[in-house]
Length: 399
Image (cartoon, rainbow, N blue to C red; front, side):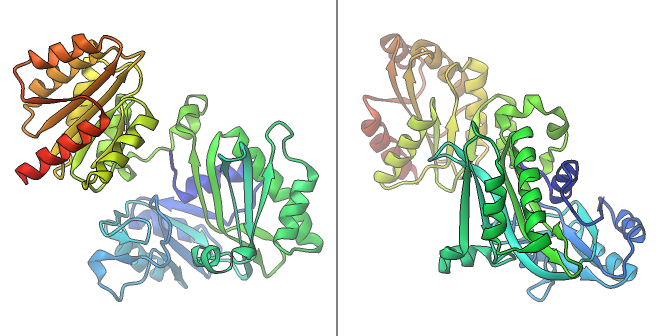
């Protein structure tokens, strides 16, 4: 789960992390009132969407000459003008794709006199099973180019969760940022605060870009992105309450209500599979046969008829879907039960696109019999390769 910048800063501030003063706004009037509470004379008006690259982004409705989603304002009047231009319009960034995201929230912050910008992030390193803290002296909007062109300027410090954060980790962060004296000490403290927040809140990722050194010699978090392990949110109702469902794909949001793992893709063959690894293999073999998957969808190990029906409806909500491949290996999930669910779901949604089903595992013969006697135009497949070839052929035949 992702949250907005202002929400992330509020969470980090509870751990002692330094952030500029700021106020969230859902309307132009709230933006003005927030700015009036700040000392000024420089304000920053920031679009709040779940995507990076806001500063370089463009608003669809305002043309190519429009300013981006992060704007300096030198008066309350400029705050008002920027808020009017941003709220309700669609911001397109390198991370949103051409569709962009509608800006429904703003964050008005106090301006900061910046001496130097840095980059600092934390994430779970799947290869090592450790927390990785990544730092660079080259913070700012071009960090992706730094990673591509000068990777030697990026340093990674890994922290064993069994050992926890140690003083040498803080020193490594400070030295990676080339900080000395008081700033070195501040960086060590900040690193510990961030690690504590990361572990306490079950984060997947915390990114601070930029972390800035101010003219008066302090480190401040100027921008942050935070995401959380969805499986751990039951432990954090306060974090769950920060969820902004308007920022999520409607189909993915609907899938989460049924405990379905769904991600929309750009192809035309819908996939319903049990198990993430099998789902990845299914998508790969569809591509191997010359087509592209329309989604990743893992129904899990114990799908009911209701869950399978919901999965079909979610897949078919994508107008690009021209056919569906169901690939089930019955272990915990018995093939006869999943076959009942497929038949019920196909009838319930009045399925009108080709459907290929491959079943294997527990009660597979009973499952195949149910499909054969359903009276529906379900194409059976013997194995995964056979299933992929058949669904690709079916989709091409009706194209």
